[in-house]
Length: 448
Image 1 (cartoon, rainbow, N blue to C red):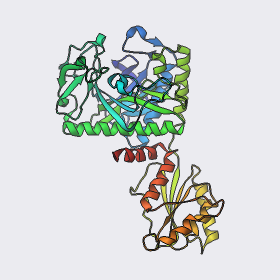
Image 2 (image 1 turned 45 degrees about the vertical axis):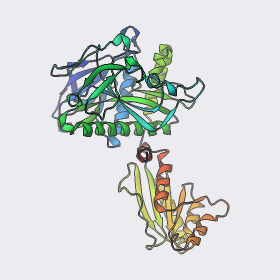
Image 3 (image 1 turned 135 degrees about the vertical axis):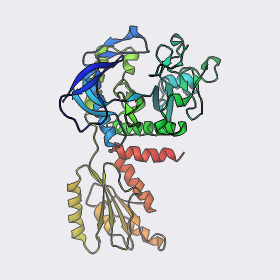
């Protein structure tokens, strides 16, 4: 058990306490802290607009904890340990990096102020980015940035002119030039005539400044794509989101702070806003509270399904390699060797065993040489997708017809070469598995 000690930091929406163990703890390394959510909801960095929604603290904590648990299961390093009360969670104490990292799937908000060429008509869908847009913003307070050692890195920004949290247009540069976060680059006032050395922001334990930047972008992309996949399974759109990073006691990068309904824009299938943006847009506190509660309830449904990718061959000579990676999160890769022609009844018994073992379903990839009887037999007896790969396509292209010309009620797909069949299988599984979605979407975007 843990109890709260002294307050270490208090922000607009949370307090961070020193965590004191009431027993000997061997599970958590470093120095844990307790993060307590507050009922405050803020907008536009304007204290006069701050309101309180009593239930928000519990909603924010629940959302953050379920999100971090999903990210942790996806193998993403996070500072989160466990939830300890309805409004508190235990986390690893980190030295926070003064950056706000933003990932965008759609062009909305301040992005449109910097890119007015992408503004759509009111009844049109926002511009969707095929490749995730990742942006760096320097985190400032009242127009300045003071590092923990007391170094005044930035000063003189004008919050009243919208210069707070300046935009870093080229984070790969050796020197970060700061720009107005809400003005197009071609406007003279967009140039804030300030710059910072990234080495003063990013700890040297992470490598060179470029290596550090690449690592942060990599984690940002992984976080967004896992959550985008999770929300997609529930029929919702993750529009954009911001996260923060910290450095743990071992000098390693961690996704830290909180990720809750204040951290993203989240919209329904008909573009209704469910996140903090509803508060910014002037909806009543009752409506906003309902939406926060809805989101907190939905994240409870985040899960990694127990699915299977069955690589089935007719004989040992029909070599099937399966996925290029040995382990795919949330997926069991199973290999079966059994002939549809010679062991039809045994194949159907094995099919029933497989379907009973994986209630979340899966995909069967069948690789068979001459006269594919196996694929049609399986496809006619399961609702699982079955994909045939003609094993002898190179030498005997006509063999493909035994996988293509199917009778009624035999929904067999035929794909060649084998690698494409495996990727199709993963695409199918990705529709209900956020971790596979993140894997495949990242591969697709990296083609650019």
